[in-house]
Length: 62
Image 1 (cartoon, rainbow, N blue to C red):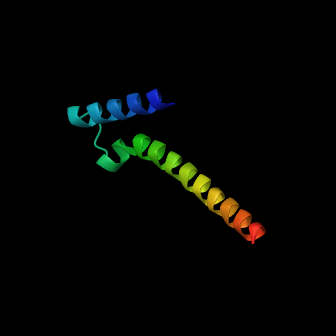
Image 2 (cartoon, rainbow, N blue to C red; image 1 turned 135 degrees about the vertical axis):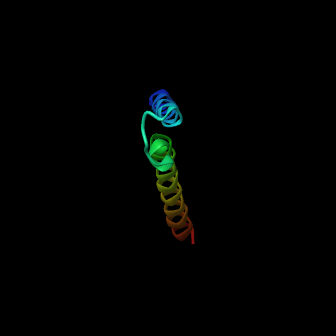
Image 3 (cartoon, rainbow, N blue to C red; image 1 turned 45 degrees about the horizontal axis):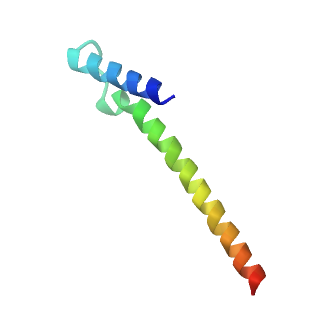
């Protein structure tokens, strides 16, 4: 999946620089933004789950 994101972003950026497409730069880099955003959301969910787990464990130990 990572290679697909890299290839798509490079193709879109190359096409934008060559003038083949007239997209906004945010749209050109959207595959990379979505990829990074997906993993950021996964990490946030994991961190929330760990915080909940530690809180429940701490409450049970009291």
